[in-house]
Image 1 (cartoon, rainbow, N blue to C red):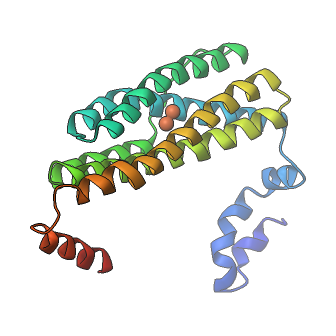
Image 2 (tube, rainbow, N blue to C red):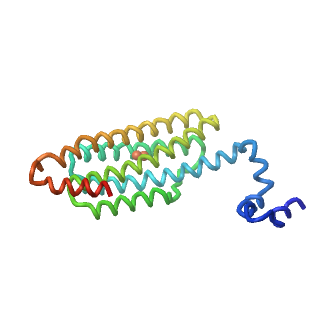
Length: 215
Ligand SMILES: [Fe+2]
Ligand SMILES: [Fe+2]
């Protein structure tokens, strides 16, 4: 009978919550903490998600390399492609440790980020502008990965899966370093290229870019 409470409705403020109340009994048990099996289930879901994301990245990074012009950016992307391939193997190791078959589950977020990257590459002019666009898109991707691996590592620690947490920490460190590298490339190579050889003649364009960035 207690469940009818939510139906009788205490006004509009509660209406949004009545849905979650419908799961009342389940919610109550998780109120003081999750069951290990529930956390494990979440962990596996996240792992399948990032496994898909990493695989998608091994296909996407070469496209970025093709569109990039800065030697430094190309090198950073190629290095991270190699790292990404290693990360896939580490994620597979994690699946093995937890006794699950390595399975990829489509990651909507990464799919969106990659679509955005492709759109940027189509819209940008080749050269410094495209390089800056690729860096912007790549850093969004890195930040998604950092968030994912940070969560996964924490889940593994909570579950007492120390070996798994260590593997995930290694990947997390690589993602953070990749993000840092992209920041360096953005500061050095791309900006320098935009200025080099553009001395006077390109001043107009520079002003136009500045104006655009202010919009
Ligand atoms: Fe990665
Ligand atoms: Fe990455």
